[in-house]
Image 1 (spheres, rainbow, N blue to C red):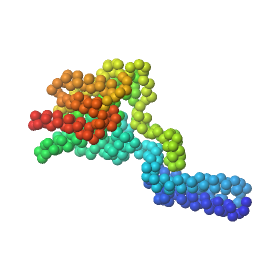
Image 2 (spheres, rainbow, N blue to C red; image 1 turned 120 degrees about the vertical axis):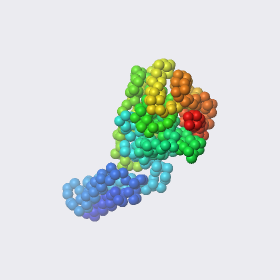
Image 3 (cartoon, helix red, strand yellow; image 1 turned 90 degrees about the vertical axis):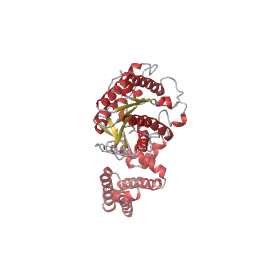
Length: 413
């Protein structure tokens, strides 16, 4: 081998090493600013390449030719990766898709975080991406919920409403309730609405949330809007438990096994996407669900399973009345569902029927808004899926709830 060849190879490796150094890589090749966890490993990789390049270029040793060939191959592969990053960086849609795939390997970039009593809440400041029904929600506030943070102390001229629910609450009707209160009562009264809705929350989550969080904010009203998510724990092989631990596990974002490859190579990310293996391993389902085995036969035929749902409603009503908070119970609308019995729509209808029974049981102790009777399954134009609604549907839902609260407040004041 000519003495010039190792020097050329060593020089090429050194150039690639410099291009991989964090300051250069972040400016020229990174699809987003470098994550803090990647800076030190990238410096180590760059320094290692630089040392190898210098060793091949200037030091003669018996195994120099094959080492030089290996070093050149590694530098070539890294060079192809850098070129791919430049090309992908020019295509915004592909760039953002690959960025989101890489972000799954950083638990601290998740939209959710574990909570010691609530299972999980939103992570403040991190947007929720990748869910068509929930897309567009603002990042969570410091309390871990959507919407602006509200100070605990309540002004004397404030009407405060706490809204409990799952994703069908998180998606926005509380904002419409606030607008109604402000419009109807300003300047004498000012409406504040706290959105405690969170995707995947069941009535059990909201019972805990109300007792540990909402009560401390001294709301005048608490709105309960649940049905869909409780059905995920019904009709399973595992015996049903009142704490829902038969189908929910401690919250944990699992790091993908190929996290290192995903972080380091956009070519690898492209391959995962192309071959359909880029499923979101950090999805909320994966983080909260035990492996579920559904029993054979009808899934929702045992109505005794709804007793826990009713217990949670009764708990919230009892605590609310003890704290001079007016409970507002609601049914949950859903769009038409042509699937056979055993679908989530059947469970929602059963919850709505139980809620009507509870509202009749409580009588004047609660306010009741039968949304499912006002928004029919045939009004499919108001839904984006089984239960999540369009902006128009959210407006109708918020105004129906707001109207009942406005009427009650006027009667009381």
